[in-house]
Image 1 (tube, rainbow, N blue to C red):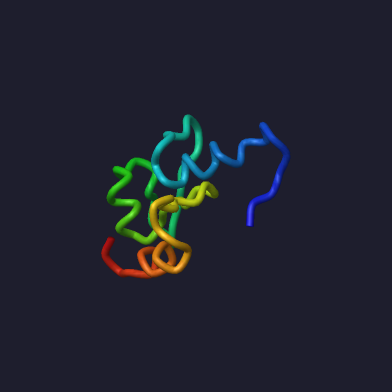
Image 2 (spheres, rainbow, N blue to C red):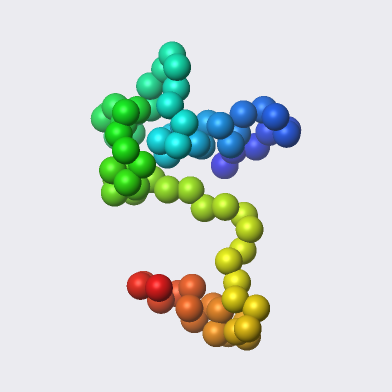
Length: 75
């Protein structure tokens, strides 16, 4: 869990970890591997991704249908 006030750099840190932002004077290491300069899709293939808080619901579907859709392995 990452907690801090607005402007503390939480989003920037996460963007750096997932490869959306490149650090200027550091590196990102995951399981002993330097992933700093990998493309985002290669970082994702290693199991690192970011989930935003905004829910992705479909207004034209009911609650159960939205949950069933979210639980499907392939969407």
